[in-house]
Length: 96
Length: 490
Image (tube, rainbow over all chains, first blue to last red; front, side, top):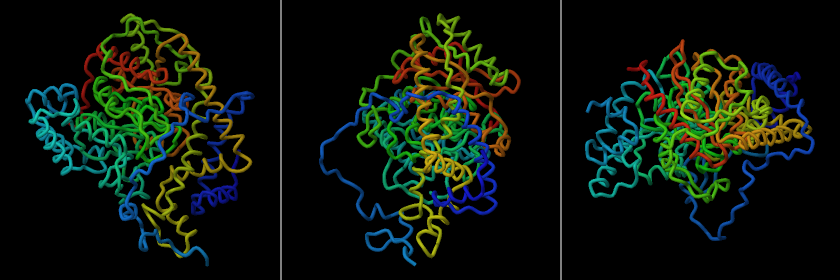
């Protein structure tokens, strides 16, 4: 199945990836080849087969006490922030 | 004892030497650091060497031992970690530019556990970016090389973890395995690598690639060493809800019991000419050795295993596209200067991600997008169930399943980079254990008859049956004798 460059642009926008025109073209070819390969799954009859949503069926959701546990202090949590304002992460303007 | 003799010891032997006072941890750690300094220019197994921290760890270990307070058989043993494990105060990049300069504010659970056991941490090891790759060539900081032949790949994604151990830079290491990323490099470098049962080892503080497949595990030069490391890091972690509450057995107990009485399943589908003849020959010889040791070979079928790569390349990228959404320039890691928030996301992710993460984010986003979810992601998750049922059926008739790890010995750097699909097919035998959440390992099975490069045997077990896998691996290790050391770096 061939992906068009327009479709590659649409997916890139969903994924918040900015691609150069060269990358779009290359990815269109590579992704098309991979999608052709994975199409072999269509040979299988999966009617009535449960999807594996948990890797191990034995793992019931574990519970813990609803108790406060220590978290990272704000300065620690912000230490890798590219930009901060007080105890907030600072980002460029959201509205034009 | 010469430095190289010391560094060639197993963890078990080194631990005994430390306990008898024949060597100090500081002496061993200095020897390891000197070997890294002498060899890593050529090998590039390390992304960061923590010299000061390692020496401080070593001196603390020696002080504990002098007081008679050694914490475990790993106390004072120098090990290293794939750069995917968060280390408080030490840069952790996962092989990506987008995390260059990121200094985690906390340790991964497995890092805490190694520290609690007294292990000395030498540094952080090279890897494919976000663990996406089978050759180490996708790392943003240049490939690690194979200590058996510097023109070849050590495998991936935990290439540095396998190369450092094979090259006697470290006594053991931790890697992660999402589709073969511990077993394949272990095979290509001639060391032991264990992918535990999903949920056996905590993923807390491990940079996430595909959360339903990722599993940390040990790489070491002997089966007993791998068992020791696994025991040190395994077990329930309240910070990873997928970890099992089952008790952790003593993984070294019982590994000497031999192969007599074991039923070894040989899947027809893994011996249909998909491997290099030299690889298949060594794997078949290993099976013959098991038979000679009193094991029974049982023909089994894994009819869905040939769909493994296809299912994996939908599930793993889908999960990756979601996990990698966090790299947006807001809270940590790279931020590209931009005038608006939306531009910042796009610019940061364009500059920060290499070609392989971009490819997988695109593939995963597509597979999860409206109109395609049922046809791709959901179908792949159903195929996972079929893959698991194949194994369940096989394990009604055998105790472990055996086959190749990788269809080839170490290939040349550059050989497969131009064709992503060919690279993905390097994982054809390892991926099914991840899809089915089963424990699996790679154990050396000798050298390729022509290239004299290492070949590994893969063993896959029942859920949480690492003890039987380790016992079977140890039987082969004992039969074949000590693995030779690589000579390309002296």
